Image (cartoon, rainbow, N blue to C red; front, side):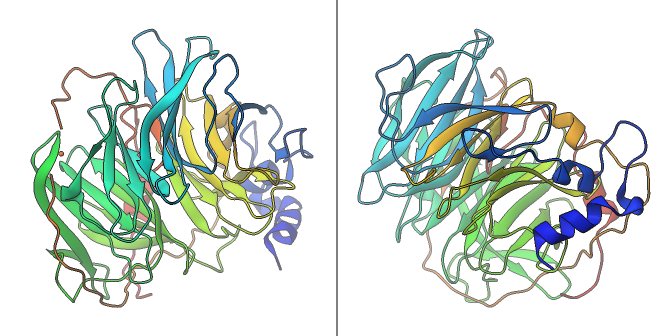
Length: 425
């Protein structure tokens, strides 16, 4: 049975129905409305507007939005507005990073570039000191640190290594960065800067995960590292580093407290997640996973209670993928892109609605998905060492990010710790 068939069946299953105002997984998924004029299917009470389209000037500005928007994040501004930044995954030094600035009322007030001349800027991550780390997904690719205000030029951070970078997540408690690698023998990296806030120097390591899910950190040149093929999005929240790998279609979590790895989603679990890619946390610790699928690309919510809820579906966007999810300061607006749009070069949207309602807990008992450790093949890579930039004691909060930090987080994924098992994969 495919995902759509399962959702129809689940909608008629009494066990999965919530009592009271909180909707169940099946009810929310089944209530996705018919495609709107933008080709988006959303739950009742949600609406979308187009923010930017490739090769067209952003409304009210003369800035032309680049093609293939990918990873993104938001930053609060002193005037109670916010900035959304988005990568451009164009090859051969045609990529970069763009920004749209919003006023306190959500109106667009400016658009501009914050990085250029780079290649295949895929995902990235935010730092606690209010910068955006954009990743080059090419052989010997690098990470560039960008100012979302566009006042300082982007700077290469070679200490973070030269490889096919995908995404970065910052752990402010452990004062470390975690990086994914989109390659056949891609690995999970940890970077510990000499000085927190300065990415100029530090120690870059790779993860080795044993059969019980215990993680140890090795020098980059070690042949004993675990291969996580096709590493994609990564995000940090409350001690958990969650990342996706597309070839085996899994969502994993590394617990920085216990130094163990578990699988949060694997094929065969329903509702299905096809081609998990970019990820982002809401301020309350719910995880949003973007699909990179051939058709019917969805944004899937994994709640703090362990439920999976499809909350957005593209219609007529064949060959595209969802990318760059990030919330505004209120948590009621989500920015996200269809990377190639409905047959075009990419469109960026703003989705508005009661996102907290989607994560409301069920009042009936449901069966938890199996959680297990993960293993992989060994792969080695030449050494690169690394480092970080500035003090973060008085900064504005970073309010949402794909592969980044949610500093407004409340609570967290406590359910991960209660569900952590000892089964082998």
